[in-house]
Image 1 (tube, rainbow, N blue to C red):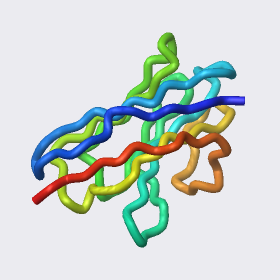
Image 2 (cartoon, one colour):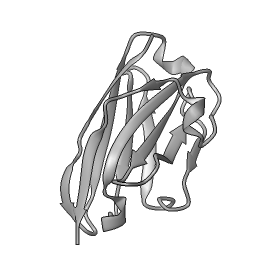
Image 3 (cartoon, rainbow, N blue to C red):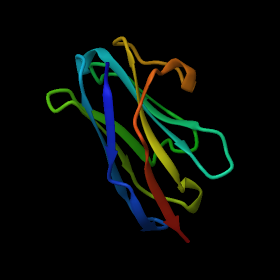
Image 4 (cartoon, rainbow, N blue to C red):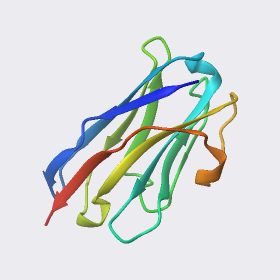
Length: 125
């Protein structure tokens, strides 16, 4: 069983940056593929970025590619999402997700079975 706690959300102006963190407890962190999803009001939850257990493979949604960077520190059991060039359309609750297995997983939320409580990111224009 893995517990995930996100932090780092907040209010930022368009063009600004934020770094989200997701701290994990329980389980062997390096054996879990991780991902960040986001959900804007009135919209479905969508994939933002994913990373393999060892951290060697990453994947990004087209909407964030080139602006967001996912990384992980397995010694500290933490995954990060560095967000730059933020846009108002990036406003959403951001969720950390995990699934057992070293390889990079898909962009489908159904593939992940552990979720954090979410952290709000608001980008003002």
